[in-house]
Image 1 (cartoon, helix red, strand yellow):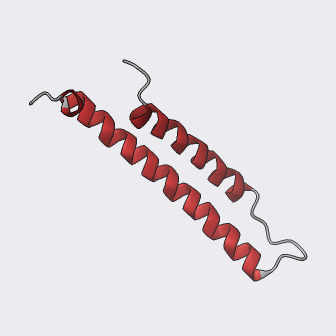
Image 2: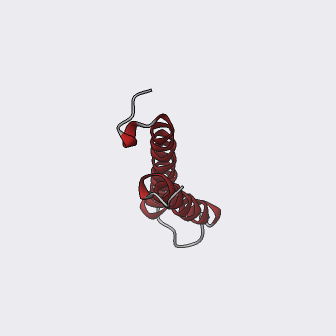
Length: 77
């Protein structure tokens, strides 16, 4: 199987966004000088990274399933 960006690329981008979300989530702390706004933005940004990772992984799985069925090769099931 060739390296198809609509399957493997989405999987890799999902892993990168999940890594970034985990990196942010692991470093979230309320320290001296932290404002409520900056802490809230960090939480929202972390949540958005996890959502984007999930979106990429769901897209990769749907594309892999369609490729398996032959939709991209103009074949009927």
